[in-house]
Length: 351
Image (cartoon, rainbow, N blue to C red; front, side, top):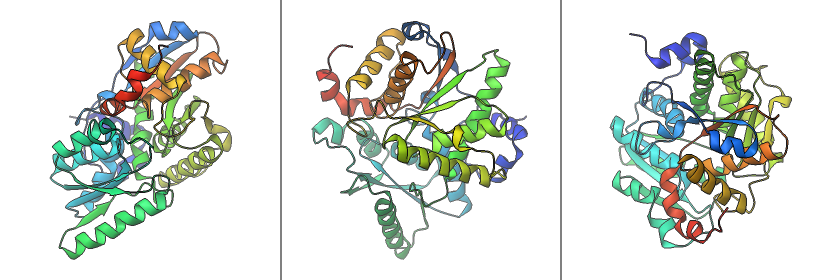
């Protein structure tokens, strides 16, 4: 019987060249957000990647399938990854390791200037402890190269102890392997759009490491789908983020044998909802969290999904979309992180 991923590979055979550890099989649903869409004058839809299976879900499951596939191919028994204190990627990496029998070693970076107890002990931090991850801290938060280099030092120590570690590098100077998961997601979305009669005029995604944004864009363009993909900045300003997305997208396209598939004009980023910075609340994000919950019973987090939704609402209100356009918001998950933001959420003014 042909599985879901096999059907995606039929549309893009080059994707099948890369090792993959299957953690999910089957498309995530696309649902209408009629009440929220009506508030901003568009046909708003949500792709529920927050429902991907594995330890409370989230979009990083798609990326981890390829990182873990490469780790298993390399004969690893231990996996190392770095991320913010409330990182969904780190939590899902630890869960994927446990699912596949690998030892998870995680590094938590001080990216967000929050010292309250909930942020540092609940949410994803609590889940990491439940998953039995080995946790180490890194004092910096905006130095990707240094964070990756520290992982490499830990890996060397583990090798000396007899382990076979694999490092998931997230810095710009390492191959964007995880982006392949969102190349596949774009093919999946296009197949759904056609099968369900859902023409999509725009797609909105969170844009941080850029692997979700770049991967979706590459997958769309390799399928001949010219839909605009709008990246909402969650970590850095629009200028450097635009450069990063273009680089990552071109690297992914080259990995798939189509280095000319991405043009600078394809890169759309918006940083209106970013300030005061990564993982920090602002009025637009607080409004998006409240509206998604009260209008659609959809929970979003302050770091990625809620900020991306805030960006989608801003784009709709500012005229970036035509009235009645079908706009797909990609829900990347992150619900466990909400519990780390209790003080912000309880102190946020009503939208």
